[in-house]
Length: 336
Image (tube, rainbow, N blue to C red; front, side, top):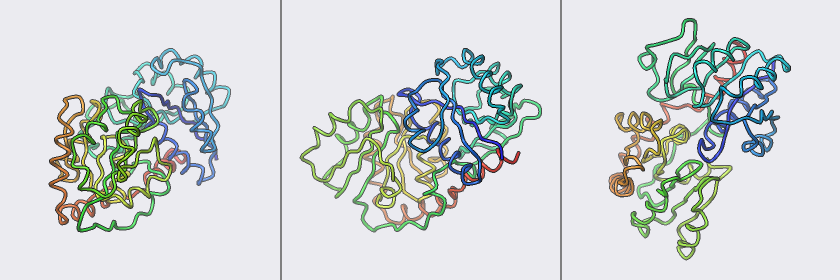
């Protein structure tokens, strides 16, 4: 079986999501017997990738100028004899994809539908992704769409029904890998802290306010602040209500049936949170850039005290995401 090569980046601006979901695909491919090698612009993701046991080729290029890396990437493709390449980046251009796809079969992990991608295959696991979302297509490109392809970690592959407690007294607050608008601190300042026995806060590796938050709430025994959590599924298990930005984390929460309040941090998260909200699955508190999210979270936490609402959405979320997306993705890429 040929090796799977993956092109992705991670830093304080693009955060960890791209690399994390690609690591899930790599784990699934490794289970199928394939070797997995990452290709990155710089060394920022290096420690995380190696920590998971994978080799990484660093191009020494600019992560936000992918056209400028084509020469270096072409050398790697030719030297390594790469037959298929999974690319996960919002920085791609049509000319970049066209050139790289002429050298190897490109599988592009997308959720923006920015243009008709000249690639072998497009993968979009967003809850809103369907044929109508991609009306303009490059001739011959294959499309794999929907939550069935959400690339989650192994721990999410066989979730059991979540136990929904009568009283929601354990909440989890997250903002992804960074918190550019300081939304975690603002939420903690707004919600009634004493109504909850435990408030777990995951700041993310690039959150510059973690130390400040620790100092501010050091005397509050119910608030627990983490930079990141390796076995986050254990926190999901304990959580009665989660508050999360609108990235890939929503699919993890769905697979475990965690009642969740969402908000958006960037334009690319808006379709996600809007669709989950429209379907009555995850109510949305707004956009962090508008400043009204903390009040929205406070209002929705009050609404989600109702046991029947949480029990209903928990079941519906688990029907939506079964946790086997990484396995499906690895299989289709390796066997295509």
